[in-house]
Image (tube, rainbow, N blue to C red; front, side):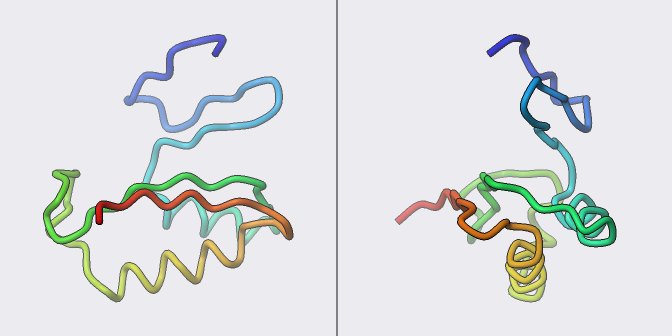
Length: 87
């Protein structure tokens, strides 16, 4: 990796792509509005208090459904979704 990504940044542009460090719902809304697609989505949302994220207490099934729908709209054909979870 060319540079270390600092969490206070909202995005970092690399030679071949961008890493977004932001609320995924806001980023995907913008991408949907602009007709943008991505080839890779990596996410690790909070599940049943297994992780402590900012505002994780606001996580619920409606948010999960909203995010899943948006992922379907921004992931390109043949794109890859990496969804990290604990079993």
